[in-house]
Length: 412
Image 1 (cartoon, rainbow, N blue to C red):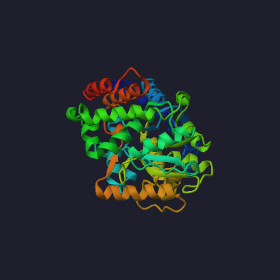
Image 2 (image 1 turned 90 degrees about the horizontal axis):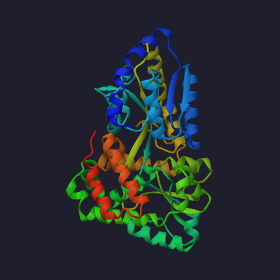
Image 3 (image 1 turned 180 degrees about the vertical axis):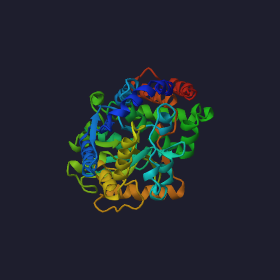
Image 4 (image 1 turned 135 degrees about the vertical axis):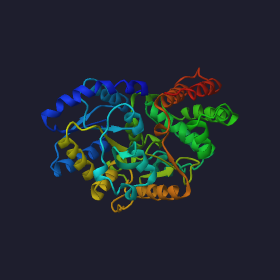
């Protein structure tokens, strides 16, 4: 959704919201796109927490983040927005377009409980408007440990090793890299390559700041060539599966590696697999102690009445309870968002991610996801170039580099 589209929503809100204020507080409706097995399990826990607190709960699933954002916009235009929604973009984008709630009465201790990099992403004009649920590591590489061991291979720690391992896997008749059809999965591979080859400073200047000297330089051209080379180690059926389907290839023993966020950890856990025995989790090749992350959060919209505001605040406080917060993260495969939560019950992959997050926070190696950093139009333009570079043999690395330079000029 483009920023200019969101800005057009503001005028559509004044009358409908005011007109419904007299009808009394409705259910706290959450619009979301959590539909995989582990996602649905976490959603059930959110529902359980709300109902246990005596709060009127309703959840509305919409398949796919892009479709969900479109439905959310339509709900605003029709005057029937939900009380809260799952978001994957900056709260600023929504705050500039639609009225948001104020969770200040229940958030005084959040700056102490939350990492600074997360607390500041929850605020619009200084006040908290969203609730974080868990932290997801995006630069994770998942591997079928038993399959690699059977073939005498180890998970690659550098991109040079990746190509060596991928060649060996392909010769053995195994799909080296499992991937799905979404643009986000292609972008995840590309970002992991840029961070692994160029490091966080290159990532920041090239992809976040759009530095033309780096985007148009020889290093980026080499990365685009390697990005297209990676596709040789994937299968043709990727067009018909999502990320969970790609994880399923590892679970079936048909593929060996996957680059995706640690929500895949939830799928392995759900299948009864044990880290260090059945599967392994490592940072992407060349990343070492780098932690590239995003976090699940729920954005609260302007309440329809004072009573509705109190219900929203009670729900926000409930979702931030230490035990509830830990349970959401454990089920979904991420790590707790609160600093004071015990890691009891979390598996080895989550514990390693948690340790790396804390170390990266202290050492300046924490990198927030690209989607939360770029303007919506600029992010979409970059994503489109990366997807086209992956899909089209006619789009050479040289042409893709020219389009990257053009995409970097796109702003909302």
